[in-house]
Image 1 (tube, rainbow, N blue to C red):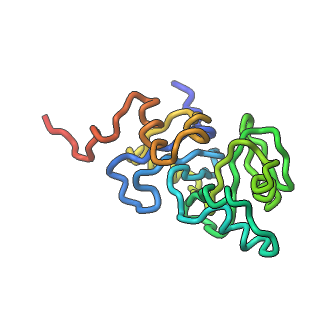
Image 2: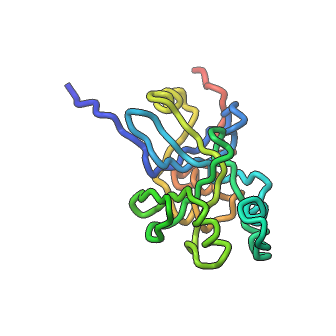
Image 3: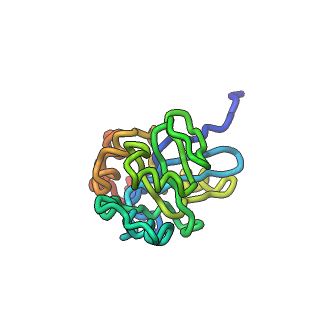
Length: 189
């Protein structure tokens, strides 16, 4: 009998299948920060929410005018959970008041990372999101069994270097898949 130890997808992309009906995840790619027997947490990396870093900084430190370049730094909708909470995904190295080391990446949740980015002394590469995607124990596994997602190892180039509107297709291309050729219809022989 084979050992059926679970296979977790931490540091992977979840690529929404074209038939994904959930409006929070349709046409998204999500970076999985954590996945274990207790559940999963990730950030949607290709859905800007219409805000920019200047908008956020005006709320956090209203006495200081944000640098003009902050107007071109988008904030992403990281997922439907705790949409008022901020997350900054960046390469490992810089430590802020609240930084979780994720191997080659770091996840910072304190305001000082935003101030550092605005002031030009923060990480060179980053993704800023409000909210996160969360799954209870077994929920993501069930969605994978139902073919709601494709998965592949995460790629920092896709995370940080590609324009957001190219990330979904680039992640699928890592698997050799063109999402526009997939259908939700089952074939019958």
